[in-house]
Image (tube, rainbow, N blue to C red):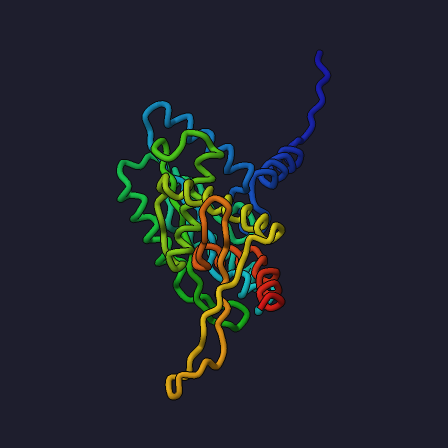
Length: 268
């Protein structure tokens, strides 16, 4: 005869599925997380080798920090879940939607035939996201800036494609927020030039490469000089004089404007 034993492993299997799901999905929105998105991106890149084209859309909510700070983190979380639901309603089953962290989302739009397919999806997303939200008794509107990188045209490696989509997204923000922008090679060159200028700006502050030009303020009634304007100039060792329109925005972004302002006041 035979002696057999049986064990019900249903709960064990369910536990394993829950652990696997948690490892690949965002706890708040239940979308794919960064790790799972990276896996799907690598799979999409492999299909590029077989002739398929796809687009990577990188989304960032505009003014999310303001909403989070004024209404509280719980309301911010509810907003993120609402946005995730609207994004899911815009994509197809073969596409991949992920929350990369904070208020950043990404979409792999698979099997595209032309750039207009991507532009159409970006437009649908913009329309869906900017519809009013009712959260915790507050009614408000948010928009998203979207950067788009195409593969293989804009990259055949995951890191390169993500970087290019991110650059396009920041260009979209610079264009006025609530817009979408396709990656262009010139964007990378502009970012590199901007980073170089920031490094040289820090060096210029330490080495004292700035100077002031004084412009008289004249009273038109009697022709007397009533004061002077102090105009800041950067005496770059290689580029001669650099006007404020080039370096002041960078100084404001990096906080170096405080050091520059103190130097101008002391010198003047």
